[in-house]
Amino acid sequence: MTVTVYISCDSGAIALGAERIAQAVSREAQQRGIDIRLIRNGSRGLFWLEPLVEVLTEQGRVAYGPVQVHDVSGLFDSGFLSGSPHPLFLGLTEELPFFKKQQRLTFARIGLTDPVSLDDYLAHDGYRGLNNALTISGADIVRQVTDSGLRGRGGAAFPTGIKWNTVLNAEADQKYIICNADEGDSGTFSDRMVMEGDPFVLIEGMTIAGIAVGATQGYIYLRVEYPHAHKALTTAIAKAYAAGYLGQNIQGSGKTFELEVRLGAGAYVCGEETSLMESLEGKRGLVRFKPPLPAISGLFGKPTIVNNVISLASVPIILDKGGEFYRDFGMGRSRGTLPIQLAGNIKCPGLVELAFGLTLRELLYDFGGGSASGRPIKAVQVGGPLGAYLPESQFDTPLDYEAFAAIWAVVGHGGIVVFDDTVDMAEMARYSMEFCAIESCGKCTPCRIGSTRGMEVLDDIINGRELNKNIPLLRDLCDTLLNGSLCALGGMTPYPVLSALNHFPLDFGLTDQAEAA
Image (tube, rainbow, N blue to C red; front, side, top):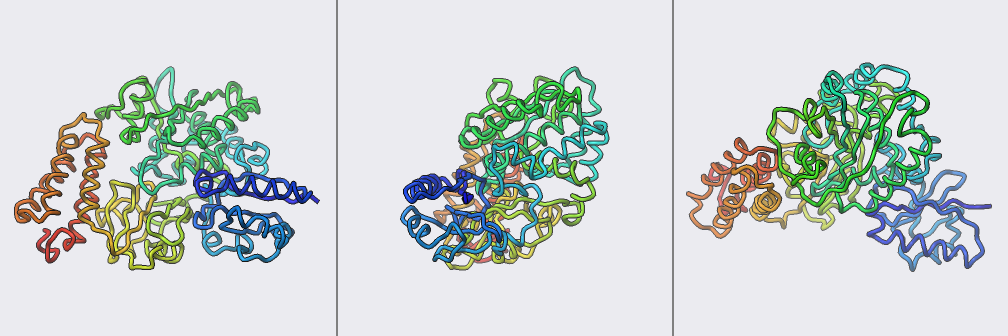
């Protein structure tokens, strides 16, 4: 009997040796005359257990990990192909506490299927959302997305339905759908995992968006550092075209949607939607003034939807199960689920998809297992390099856009980077200014000049020079960046800088928070 073995093709797993493990398992099976079917699936998101090897048994898929090349022969000796015990035996994958407690909607297939198998995708509810969308009007599609409460998962949290409705009602001979796949925030990898582990769900979501608003052309703006995602996307797009899910007369509906991948050139600022469109048009990635909004005058001056990967990948399940189904997850105005990425000094790094509402403390300890070093967690940065640093006193804040805004923080893209008590928060504040200086497009003075001056002021503070003068100067500079920058790169750099200063004054040479004020 042929046994099915799953080993991830996710680039995170590959970086940890998954390719070598797949080769070793194939070689060992061949030498022993054992017939196996090896499937390269997406990652389950349990990265501290990668390379993870799963075997399909009568009880379900059982997991072994983390597996090294020298473990492979021992796994075969122990009879792991029948789910037998071994020191690396973890039990049924879906019963692992980290995985079992999740609510996977957007990530429902990732880790289960062969990412580029259209048959696998269809067998696991793929294209059901598109099939439903083809039977209703564009306005009804937009209404479902609006009713779901979906907000932009790229960081701005703007209601997706409002953006789509604006493009739907715009008069134009051409409209565009852009997927912002320029995932550049520190500690974020959910976009990459979708594109590598379930590319068809992104393609389906973009196709639904195009049909909804009358856009016939789509572009995936992919960061150049994602070669595995590029390969998976181009393979899946070709298969979607061949099966009639892209191109003209989609599934006999008379609807048209063309899709292609465009590679970015490594500029962080091109994650900002207007700078991204400049790049797509073949220009230097500079931020545009608003108005006009992209929904009115976007790519090549035409009405354009710009959504990130997770936003678009959340659309198929909304059209499959309905807006109310998706809205039933979450709290307040934060509806649905969010793929949360745990990284940094954390014992169990990985991907957690849950409804909005759980707290940072639950994420850090119930899922993350505390710090990898075993030391107390001093701070977490949520929302990428421009997100605030949160102290232990704020760990009970629920993951909710409005709750985070109330403490002057952002949920952003859902990336969480963890630091233990050995971190110097003044150095982290300086890093934030340096990041802004390096990545600034240079178009506006507050960002271009302010970030460089900020580095100089922080150098003086770190070296203990004239704190009475330099602390107020740093605050004034942050106020200028916050209120005078053209886009969020300069406008949000004060978040990590001021949160570090406000919550960790001792690291800035101050005796208490009153001195930091």
